[in-house]
Image (tube, rainbow, N blue to C red):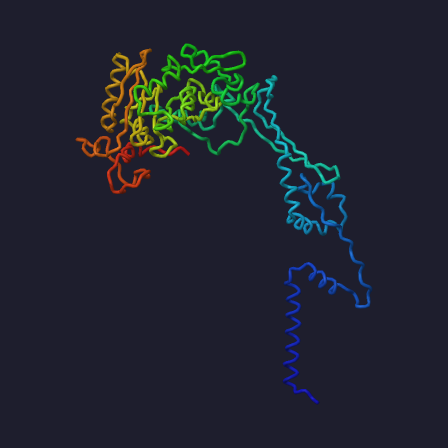
Length: 480
């Protein structure tokens, strides 16, 4: 029976399309098996040729710790058939749970690169150089004994003249930036001036450095070689800040204003102002110009947490002493930049001879304290203007009285201890009525857009004591 010509054409077209779909499917299928079958069929010289012998596949090895990359010698000696499946085996082994466990187990056994900085931990005499140091790590193999060396180059920081290598801080020891400052009246030279680009280098350890003395012994004594600053020991020896005893620096708990010791000073403050209640009503304290931070260190016994800060000045890096003792501290100065704290962060702010002119520049330094002091919090000021009668001290005291009244701080205590050391305690009000009743709006109130984030639920349209600091500190920049 003859097939009509139009039906033959349709059948031929159907078979052609089916063949094309099969070919497209084979080329688009990512399966290695499909591609290998297609490749073998396309390259076979004849259908009568005998089938090729199956290739023997080695079992996929499980990587051991340190076997994270192929070694050069293994790659050279590898057989051709093994190299063809190298990528497939790597992907398969990386997806196995035991391979992940093996790679993770290498973390605890790895060794840190060593840096030769010209001195060791025991104080052996070394060369003071700032060149590059090499560190080599050995990658263990999986039974072959082959090694691949990884080289890491570290540079020790280059410090300028007059800067201790152990105390080098790039953002504070940027001599070029400090020389370009137009003014130093507001302590600009004590602020951060980070170089660009940021240096990537290692700061040398002091010669003879040892692991720190554990807490709580470290509050009272540290290793001398860890913070070798004999200048401060000599300069403050009559004020009982710190003394040297054999291999240790000992902190007796004294200070410029702590004639009877810091413990007695803390008790005296609570006696004259019982509402402070260290550890209950007062939990967070900011200590301005802390020195070696003995005030904050001993407040830990009263369950009060103190953040201490001081600048890096002619007294050397005092904060190094505080940190080595285990007391929270950081380097900063009250100048043109805001302190790195949110508003109303502290229950008490303390200053004992911190050498800050609070009334300078329109009272900006004191307004910054007002920003970080919570409503109802206390400012404790122990300085010579409080209890001395010299003209300069009295001028400073009168300026402080005028400034504190203008920001509605209330003087709650002015007293002297048995050693003649005077203390005045101010309290920040919890109501904004005083600000609204002032005859002169100086310092002015801030606009709402410049105000802080309220810690309590109050109307954002209200005039509040929380806004007081903003206008006078608007030119300050947050510390990065």
